Image (cartoon, rainbow, N blue to C red):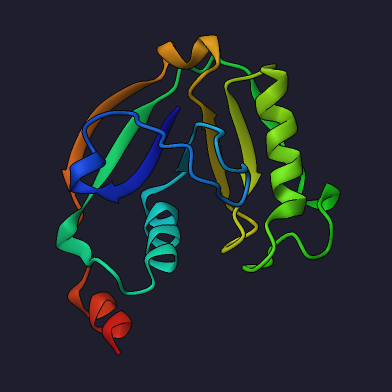
Amino acid sequence: MLLYRITHKAFSHSLFAPGFSGRWNSDGKKVIYTAESIALAFVESMLRRQGSGFNRDFNTMVIEVPDTLLVTHVELNALPSQWRSAHDYRPCQQIGDKWYDRMVSPMLKVPSAVLPEAYNYVINTLHPDFAKIKLLHVTGLIPDDRIEQMLKK
């Protein structure tokens, strides 16, 4: 399986997890957020950046995950009604932290809060199977300039 991550050029040449909190992890949990497609990774990145740092500052990471690795799946219908909130990540963090601490699988497949019909994959960098996940290559991020212009407004 191939996964995608849009990240600043300075951090795009290794699978690095700083441990910052996110929707599916609390502070100190070393995970990497990825998406099932470049398009989803781009939309997630643009919303997270909200106009700070523009396209030429970022790269697309292509990550290879062996199909044999176990993936824990969070079902959309099992999530609380406010799981998509941009202001309160606690319900999702509780799910993600429980998965992270149990170390059952190296990846957590979760619905995207931006497009719930699409999926992101959270990778636990401390799981023993993390070593099997590889950065295949990195490409420049070159979307249509009109997208960047919309964000500058």
